[in-house]
Image (cartoon, rainbow, N blue to C red; front, side):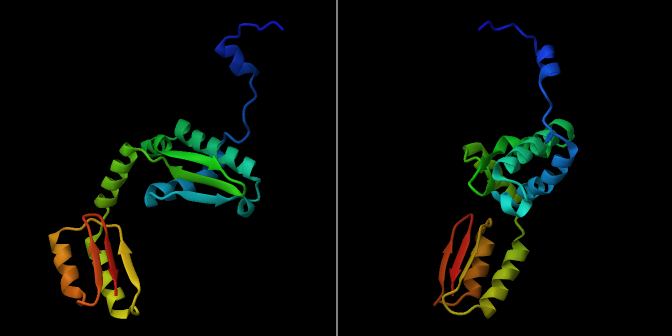
Length: 172
């Protein structure tokens, strides 16, 4: 068998274009990507709920994501692409954040940047007044000395309290 030298331009002309690398796939994928950016948590997409096979869903997600990165002028998707991976499962697709030290540091900074101390304190106070015995309150939040003081003034001695700089766990 003889192999011919082919230039990249010739290859582009002869390679068929993927039908899922298009604006409609990008439109389907964009809400999932936006949710990933907002939540910072992995996402699972069940193939059965979409009407696609896991293989087709995997291709559509990858191609839609690539179309967005290639054609949208928003850096947030390019950054997300470097931080995530897509894996096909038996019944769907999971988009997950790669476990790298750099991703962990960036995620931690973002968590703290959007940490609303008033909200979680109000949630804690409401929960503590209404929660039954042995129920757990847990939040991943940035905690300072004033927050610690607030918590210890709110709870009774019977409650189990576990506080670090990055989370609060209280068992009533």
